[in-house]
Image 1: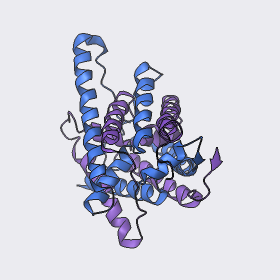
Image 2 (image 1 turned 90 degrees about the vertical axis):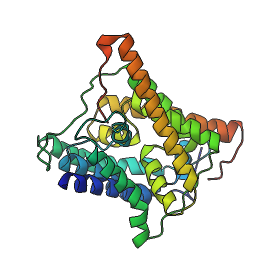
Image 3 (image 1 turned 45 degrees about the vertical axis):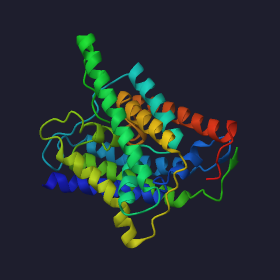
Image 4 (image 1 turned 60 degrees about the horizontal axis):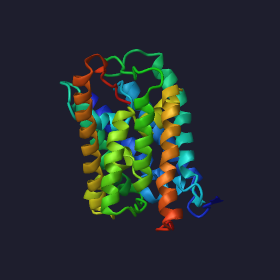
Length: 158
Length: 148
């Protein structure tokens, strides 16, 4: 139960941060990606603020092996660069640039939608398509693992 | 390039970013997991026993956020210009790409860069670079919309 409350609070504060930062508004995100037009640098400041806190906090977390739930921490296990990382990030970027929505804001939009805010159905549509894309990847991975058995490495979550 | 001073919000961006960083550090300290949204959602497809509850709790937290925000302040209006077809294409690419690349803006951009991960830096540069392309094509080649 404690673990669920911790996770809920994490999601809540994350979402509040996205809204305050203006990043739950896809038009503002696109304003950042519109480098050759009228550029809104806000997103860079969001990243800066988040990383400033993260640099200190994650260094601290690294020094403690066990989480407050008593479970060991799960750090990303993959090291070094590979084609999957680069190709995946490139594809993600294209999708991000089409609608101005990445996974976090998508879920905030989905929540806002149920509250009757503007763009209600659009948030839902995006999330459904995103889940389909994830399922597609899972299916591809299963097929790929079957074809070349030794490389069936499970990707850790980021 | 010209600066869009009308929409530029440095202070709320910094403060909101700080909250995002705080939430990411919190999740690692309390639950011991990386606050990567695509990873948290993706882990629900093909779930493992005992690894589901915290993911759903985090996602519910994200979805409740606009309601909680509304209780104390006015939620900034969200504007989605993308058409239905564009939203479907974007969602598919975001879902597939983030799973293939093991992360999104939060996992690589926030957590990864905070951990000074070389992989995350490369991933972030990659999705920033290609993120710019569709906006350029839509606004400056096809000349659709753009007055965000």
